[in-house]
Image (cartoon, rainbow, N blue to C red):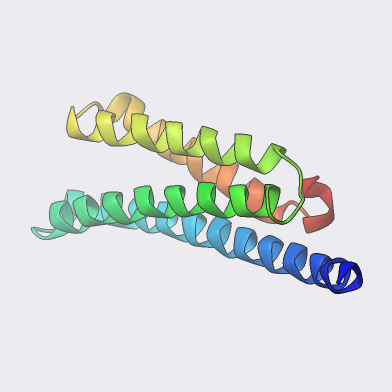
Length: 131
């Protein structure tokens, strides 16, 4: 029985790492789409609705990133570092939502750019370097 557990551990770790990369990619995409919808917010009547819906999707993607990081860490036996990174993103996403609702574009826009840059960096980090 021990050999079966040992044999499936690397497969579980690979699956967890893949799920983590997919979650980061989804988060990066949703943050980018928020920038696109922000442009539409300035130029079209449906931009506000699209940006509002996009904010909810982006927040959900940040929660998915945290879940994927926890799954890669605990059952997958990976590093705790991605959990801290994902937690930081969720905090930034929370601040971003509050700033958007409060209509504080002087902080909301630069924070969105920062979040996109950090998400791209997280996505570009090699899987082996996550530990």
